[in-house]
Length: 298
Image 1 (cartoon, rainbow, N blue to C red):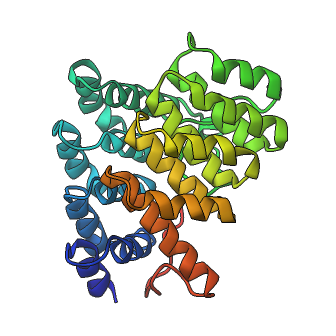
Image 2: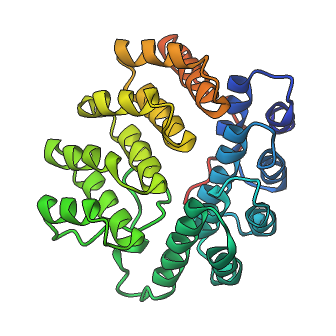
């Protein structure tokens, strides 16, 4: 089964939805086979697949993937998700490559991602074995987040102010975002939705991702507006599409069908994958292939 999944992932003749089925299955496995297939996919001609493959390598926190992720980060034609993946792995040995990209990469979203990754590594290195900081906390959403949630004693109002404050550092705003996500409730969701107007495309893309995790219909109108906005950064639109797929009401499905023909490939493919996932879910089948190893637990 593992060999089949690896071959299916890198087979460019397969529909993008089938390749994503393989990707989502492989990210639950460990060992050189899945790792190498995901590394190869991180340089795929599909920007969406390359993005998700690098993201998966970071979520797996596999140190053996670091050299390949460094290579992706050094290639300025590829996606900045490699920097986030290096931050997710969280090893001090990644600091130099991240600092290099922070100072030299022309893309703002890459520099901001490197800034986040460096701060995460710094905070992880400062965690005391007996008194772990919030950065080391496990996400209730089973994700390895780019920043630890802000202090739990902060109020929703305080977190909202930090998240919307354009003068604050990116890591601080991310920490507020994840604290609001973990807090939940309509007031917190409204604060998160309002931050989709932030100046940073990187932050907007993370906000859309978080709204997908929350699956709250309060976000529907704003996410729909983001997907429809052809002037929005493609990585933000793609996250909005995936978030709409996770909410999955009739309006969202109609919008995904409409934009599955979008001229921007990463947007169209995101819609296609989301619709395929919904089709499997509605038929009572698993989108992921059955795998033969125990899932990788972080």
